Length: 91
Image (cartoon, rainbow, N blue to C red; front, side):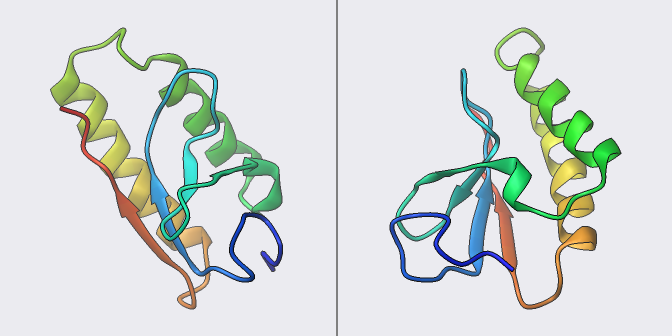
């Protein structure tokens, strides 16, 4: 499903983390920012992820982290169990 999406030959470990001007999914090995369209997420989840990153630093940190943790659960549900996803808390 996700070959050649980053600097790694193949990765199955990702992190969910918001940043300005970047998609919210990163390779957990090389830290390459991944194109969200490479994932077979529903349009609804993609929209939620985009909205979450648009709110980065505009909402209280505890709310940002709560939304991120919720989205991480949704991402895990939509990815097969062959993939590992972690959430990076913003401080």
